[in-house]
Image (cartoon, rainbow, N blue to C red):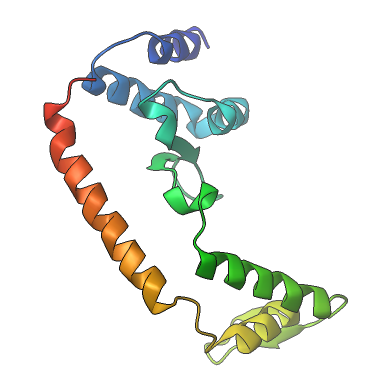
Length: 152
């Protein structure tokens, strides 16, 4: 417990990138069998430039750090339209019960199966959005190429 508190304080102190990365990995390892620490790591807000990281842990997997996707806060027009279509389909299927057996023998909820069938084949990304995404990726590559030379 004292080690965890020490690591959390180390993250807040200004240090070089490798030291912060080591501390974050240590925190993730300490959180493996500690649900309270896992919840804390999910909610914690780090100082810049580490504010783009979040902690994730699945039920049967080891916890890890990932970069928060840009599109979570700034979804494209196509993503917004897809989310809206998905929510409308889910709303229209409210109350659907039962399960469906897939060809591989697994079973899924009938609601999920129907949503997938309705949404399959829907075009989600326009040509303009595809061009914008390529432009954003090119900008990200430039930023990543410059990042090692930029102190901080």
